[in-house]
Image 1: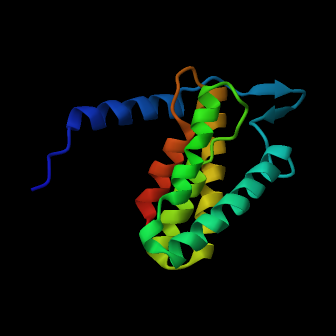
Image 2: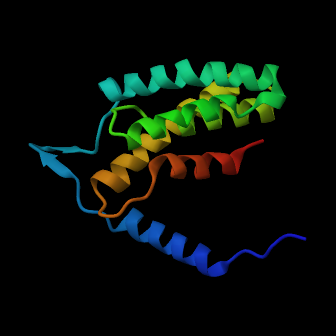
Length: 154
């Protein structure tokens, strides 16, 4: 028997999400242009692409080839959180690897996993720009990107 959904938690989360999505501070102005964060051609976008391909491809191939070992790359990517907690400058890649593994496993296609790993990285960066740069509370960008993407898992 499934447990009932706690409507209070859902209402609080969705209310906070909507408040932060539509009531954020205005973007910084630079001359006549509005700066919303890094765009195409920015070093951050190149870093996201390299991380998504470099980590997403082996994770996706591993998930399709050895389905019983799905989660190994996710476990290895968890080390990035330990490094981050100890003060080292390491990119957080859990969302990239988990999306790549799960989508590759569900679709039996490693390239679908790589594409979804890149989508997770891009959505996470967009959430970071929206909520961390222009917001005043913390909404975890990698977790938000996974919540959005995993709703569409085949």
